[in-house]
Image (tube, rainbow, N blue to C red; front, side, top):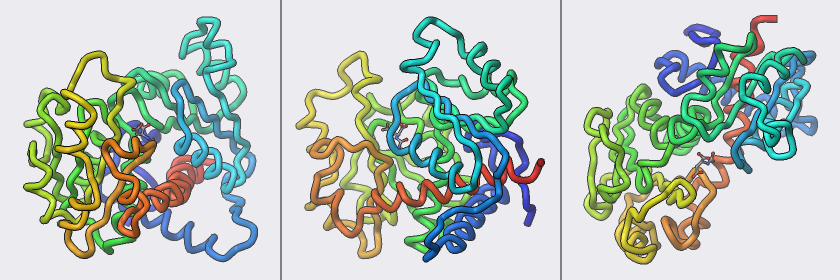
Length: 310
Ligand code: NCD
């Protein structure tokens, strides 16, 4: 087993082969147990290093957990959000990046509405770039924390049957999960109305279904996706009510899942739309756990990318 990642950046789930992905998950588990029960939840590993969180798009969980992850590794953390910065005066991504570079950033965590922005950024800076979500493209640390959560709850990933349901078309979470889960040996089924599936899905390593009820009983994991209204410029389904009826997870549908099956959602949720409130708050739901696991997994990623090249 290697002790460092193959690539300098984490731009997409495809940057991780099976050894890399397993290394991140194992490192996250080690970090979690090293900190469990400790009063001071801090490791000295990245002391003297600088991590910049560069958020050009809104975020709650991802931004906060990257900040916490870097701080728990004792890095100096700079939080930059486009609102209130010179970006609103028209400064480009490149000039923003070069400014941060001049300040000595070792790691740059970036979220941007343009697919591919982190890849561009990686060509301009000397530090490691971590993609925290780019447009509808990828969100690799979300996929890692989801895989970590599945492994923790079910004890394995190989052969696990994961059903991902909802707005796949606009979901970077779905794209990253499909790639990472495939690498880790899980079997993925995508369920969505035909209008919310991307062109080209036939070439993905997945099974596609338009009928949630038909695939429910065989699932070990049911991952619900948010309907991303802010990315929709047309009508993709007749009404919210109709969407919920066909693709929403309510208590009645949840009751048909196998005994050990879990329900996931990356957040933020539209309660009552893709997931009913009582389902989201049920013991089968890992939604709050996913957020907690996100900190350990992001610590592992920052540690593996920035820790070894002092
Ligand atoms: C997701 C995102 O921003 O891509 N949320 C997250 O990072 N936890 C999913 C979403 O916005 O629906």
